[in-house]
Length: 355
Image (cartoon, rainbow, N blue to C red; front, side, top):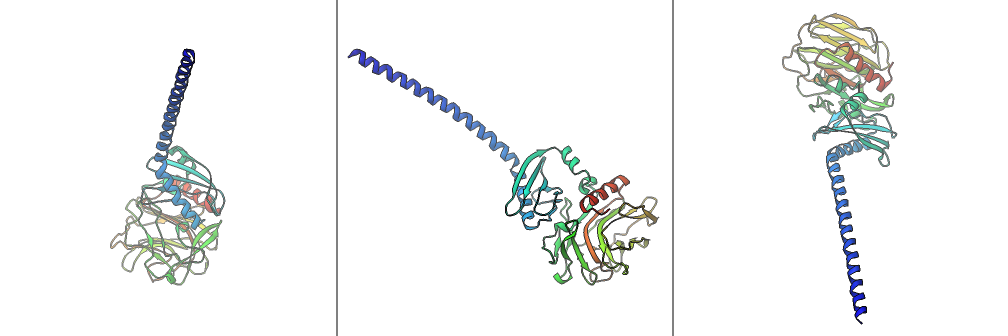
């Protein structure tokens, strides 16, 4: 009887010890798992803003497959160039604060399929976006108007296009009615969109604003005219009835009252580069990567009244309407160096396959 009671007591102690050991082990495992979960949560929190940024890109790509990024949302989400077209593979680069995220997706619709996401360094971003116009001269870039920022479907009027620079100034906000707006052509050049102006009364305009300085001016566009017999077709101008500042047309570059004429007698898309320097005043223009033509120019550009930017005409409801397409416009408030201009051309040519 005594031995039996002793055995039961011993067995109870053993079972209790085993239970305690299991409990301690479970607690240890639980603590370890909890620590792991905390670490994962911290990592997720560090990327949450960037993930939200990527989700905004996804939403735009679902709505407009030609969306090309190059913009900053109001919450500080910076979207760089998005590679690819259509429903296929894309590589997206986003930046929030100091975190840069690279996202590769396999398809857009019917659902987003992500290949991978990873953080990259600024050096890696700059290498992948070496010729991105924003990175070439960010402090001098004042206007970046892109057809792939237009929120419209094929054949629809484009009522507004936001400027893609960091300051978020809407240089191309339409102050008109839909029948006076250009239309969007989603596959105008190399599977990419362009704004189509009818040559009769289509134009875009901005609010009154300053876009250039006394340091110089560079205007680079990807565009074409559909009617080469009609001169005085304006791609972009800063011009009103009392104060002409500058304009780039299909056959001339004009700063104040100085004009440089050039030959552009084909209906293909071209890269037109028009530059003005106040030092040893000079106007220059080049088509694609051809030799630049130059002439003496004014040493100042008037800024009285600060008229708005007009795209597709000399002025609102005036003359010089463009009969043609514009895919992209860049305006820098300085004369770009030869190296900088070559990078811009390379960016455009890689994107649109012009020459």
